[in-house]
Image 1 (cartoon, rainbow, N blue to C red):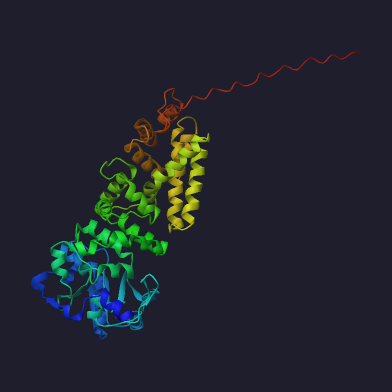
Image 2 (cartoon, rainbow, N blue to C red):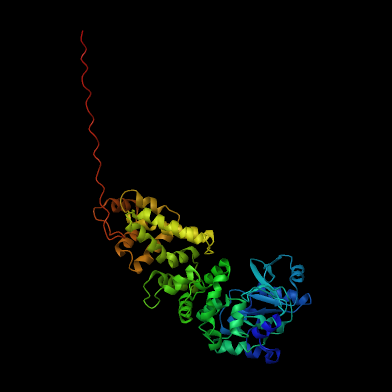
Amino acid sequence: MLKKLWRKMVPAKSKMHKRVLPFAEHHISADKLNFAAEKVVDRLHHAGYEAYVVGGAVRDLLLGIEPKDFDVATNATPEQVRKVFRRSRIIGRRFQIVHVVVGPETIEVTTFRGGDNALQNEHGRIMKDNTYGSMEEDAMRRDFTCNALYFDPIRREIIDFHHGVEDVRNKKLVMIGEPEARYQEDPVRILRAIRLSGKLSFDIEEATAAPIAENAARLKNEPVARLFDEMLKILLSGYARRCLDALKRSDIDVSIHPILDALKQSDHHNGQNIITLALKNTDERLRADKSVSVGFVLAAVLWPELYGYWQQHLSQGEKPVAALNSAIGVMRDNMEQGWGVPQRFSATMREIWALQPQFDFVRGNRPFRLLGQPRFRAAYDFLMLRAQAGEVPQELVDWWTVFQHADEHTKQEMTSAKHVPATQSGETEPAKKKRRRPRKRKPKPVIVQI
């Protein structure tokens, strides 16, 4: 039965055509690799093994994009790789890989995968697959043709088994084997197809795209941590807005994960909601090689849902700060019940959210206390984002922009001024009345009778 399923998932060997492209046809030189990847390949060659830079790095180099990660494939087993590199460790349960540390970088080294003895569950998903094989078998096991390319930096050759180079040049995303069976084998390939299509501006080939909508429900059976990692790759791809377009074109109409649901429901064409504004800002920062806060991005993506809870509690008569804290409590319970969001990100999100109603208080000592909060800058940037989306008065943002950069005398004047900016509710903060000190009563004279 497994062999029948294998024949469905991958093309027959007779259909495979090994093509070796010399340097004159691809123009990728070894100096375009980073030092760590080149050293790993070189060391494995010297130890008597085959080794190639593989996958997305080769694809990106063909497209003229500088790869962020370099992976290496070899015929050495994980244990053999471990012996070659002292600074390395074996990880993974489904399929063991080796992380080789070279200086500050980590190179992922995988052994050529074979095609037999894969352990699958009742849904067809591969649960364990520590079987090794040849480079040809490994190429059949990869997901898309553009990712099944092997670059030998010593001979300066690209080895291509599935016309991957041609598909890269035609900007086409093509699944290796029968697409529906490959999505059953690993449903996360659906999200990967959406991400690669958006990031690289590739068209998903018709046969590859056809089974996506009907197989999307399988993603609900995947570990939430794995889903979260893949969605994080979409958000931090540098082309998240294009990925959002690809997601909408996929016609996925099932609820899979709250983050994915939030992305689907955002009105990208309007372009003025907080999610699309945050994605635009994130894309621009990443493409400019600037740092990005994951917690900030997630806070923006999940804000519309939190805002809905906040308004519910406000309608029940709660004060803004208390109402928002109640809403955050609901979101926290939901996230901890299986969203896969790590604590370090969810803590940042909650801190940014909790400070939002504090911006309404612009009198007395409260603005000074808010300015001293560790998350003030992130919360202020979030407030600006909300103002761009039309949710907060721009006057309030302008006040805080001036206040945080003003000298001490100006700050004192601003916090004691009669006119204050409109708050998030559209009302102005009432001036605090001075409390009158109680008059001291004169003690009554004591009459002493003699």
